[in-house]
Image 1 (cartoon, helix red, strand yellow):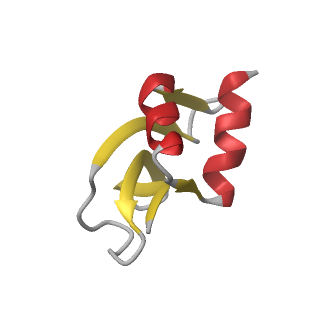
Image 2 (image 1 turned 135 degrees about the vertical axis):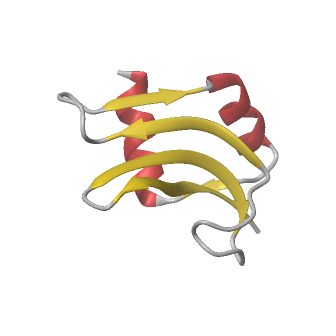
Image 3 (image 1 turned 60 degrees about the horizontal axis):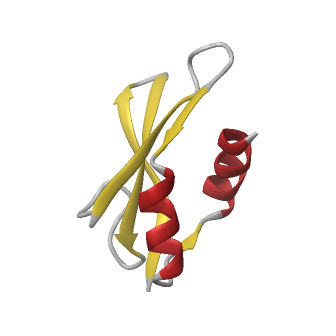
Length: 78
């Protein structure tokens, strides 16, 4: 099963995340299929950038977003 989830980057205590499409069996920072956005919680307010065309294509093809990514998608579309 393919999931849309966060992949952690950045230093200790300075997280930065890529929003990626990955196989649900691969590890959090493992092999990905495609990167579709970024999330930076360190800025005020936090920054979310998502490629809506790629997101729609992957959801149409059956990829399921995780709970945290669902919240970020709602935040980005406001």
